[in-house]
Image (cartoon, rainbow, N blue to C red; front, top):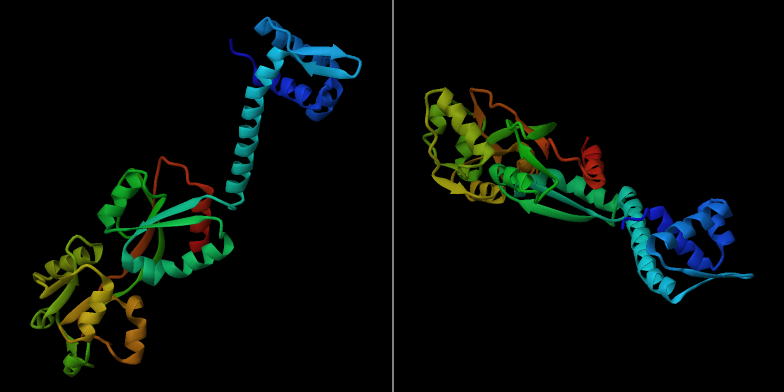
Length: 292
């Protein structure tokens, strides 16, 4: 038995109002259509569901049993409709983003603050990781989008370029004699260099640059966070390779200065990465629009 949902809806409203006329008004149907639907349902079960009288209709024992189930289903459908409206209007839901600690702190934070201000009902889930880890998060369905350094070449992924960043080498007071000097890459290698972990996009990019000039860059210290890159350079433990936009404060206050090189360091492009075959949720779509 597989009755049409519309028949159950007519039954629900007839039972709820106790009147075929009122059920017809609620459903924008004619009373004969309501009567016909009730008759179809009763015939499909082979059971009488209503007693008819001059005041309207009342449920039989069998009708009361059926109503106890149909009422639950109608309440669930109403809740589902309310939930869909809430999700559409961004009154509730969640947004899951993957990215590095540095991009969250130095790039995404203002957007996250504004997004939360506009849509306080959306729960934010931030998943930290390197670019390869963020790609895995995305393919496993653990995040809605990833914010990563480009380039990303993967037919399963769609990448929208967002902003351009500039990387540079910085040092603290211990290397003050290098202020204003212009160094070649091989001269730079005479000093202790501090780099991010070797599986990061920034590390890959600078390694490739030196390789293109026939040089190999071997860090004195490897770290896993931008904050450590900045702090170790300030303490004089070496010259750190960082994103300039992430050390604006330190450069302005003079606790760090930029090392000038005789070659141009290539810019870094940050992209928003999503699965090509998976539709974006309303919350994710709105966040991407905000970033644009």
